[in-house]
Length: 220
Image 1 (tube, helix red, strand yellow):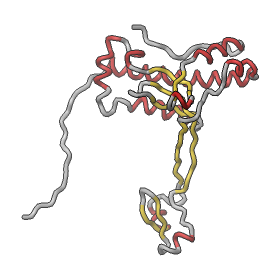
Image 2 (cartoon, one colour):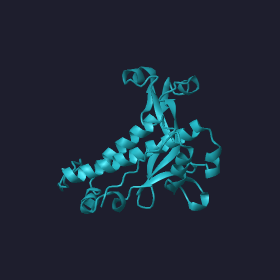
Image 3 (cartoon, rainbow, N blue to C red):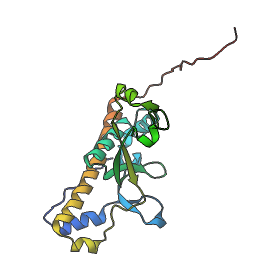
Image 4 (cartoon, rainbow, N blue to C red):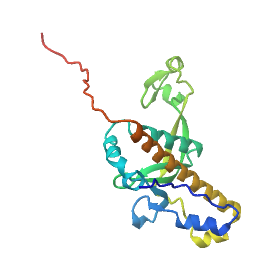
């Protein structure tokens, strides 16, 4: 089986070639088919992208806890490069499709130390994951004025709202931007597949027995 390459070269000076690329690119229903919410996607199921001689090994590797680590890192890099406005995630009954999503993020201070809150609680403020804390405690732990980034995605929104006729009426720079966006996503899919194939070719799965230390109380 010849490995699939999702990335395609497209002549960005040729309107029709760009339109053909977008119109024929695979798409996936991000929610339910009746919702008509679709997005650019690729089929990354093992049988579709992994050489036959490695498929059984990959299925075995999928049972390992750290199998998805590198793929998740590649996806995280993709999300960051797109400032989370575009994100990638697995979808499908067995999680076999990588799909492009619309998203975003917001920043929020961990502790606000708002007077209306701290006045009621002796100068302390509350934050999920950290509990109650006063300003001095927050400063000591490096949490004072520290912000966290909350990332969100909208799988119910279509990323590809355009039809062929829309592409024909677009300015060339708009069309190029969409093509580049989809090509970048396809490169991500190729990188994930390459990483899985490399792992299967160069590593093996081993079982280990480990014990979890637990404390218990006894009457002695």
